[in-house]
Length: 218
Image (tube, rainbow, N blue to C red; front, side, top):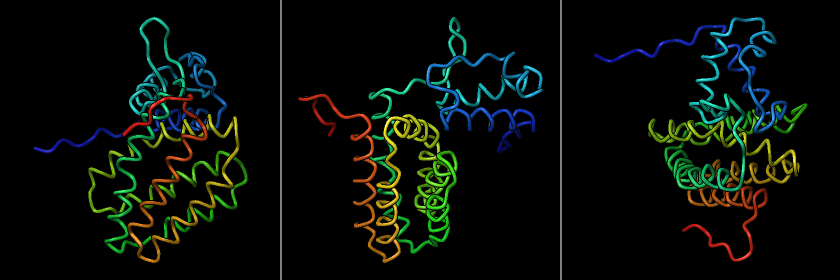
């Protein structure tokens, strides 16, 4: 008998989305403590939905729960960033190649790109960029592959938020997004895949450059 996932209660979902938004926009900085009673007071809820929301955020990799230190926003360093982006490099270009080969509708990607171009702030732009990438890999025809990429979306967004705070580079990335979409829309699966691979790789290397002499991953 197939089990049905338990829906997240509305108050927990509210706290979950609110805390996630504050993390991904830099309002809650990496390493910052997340105190249940303070969050409960801030959002006008009991500690129970806060506790459940934090557990969910820990599962997505945005926060870290420690028996002695409590709950903190996950720290972002070069090792963490490269681990997350290595997964994207291995999976996302292949997912896009399959999407293009299947001649899937890419209207959602085009719309996300337009929202990013007209975004009023970093938070809105970040959300639109995440939706752009998801719209490219979601129709790949392999639900498991899409779910695996979904699992690293929030961690990738956290890396982007930290990188953008140090060096706002979204204009360059927007140009790369437009080229990736152009190639995908023309049916050039290999070209779109290569462009996406270069886009992902160049971002993490710009944001977290390797020390001189450090070996590149193969």
